[in-house]
Image (cartoon, rainbow, N blue to C red):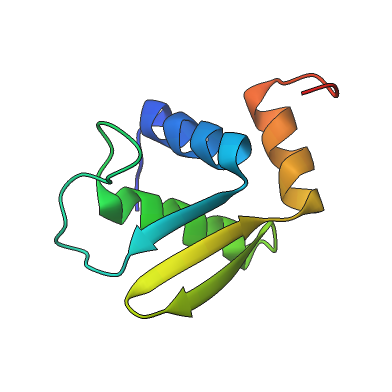
Length: 87
């Protein structure tokens, strides 16, 4: 799935800031409740991509997906977003 770079950056910044992102399983849900201007489907697919690379841990419970950032994911997002080691 093709995502715009601005949407991907918003998703990654939210995940980096919070450490965990929750999505509802419904693909027809238009906007994501926590990330403004980004469709829920885009958030699900971007985070599933990170999960397939082993950068986040995915857990499913009651129609919700939880994506937890691990140490490798933190290092990847820090490099992708251009953050310093202190952040």
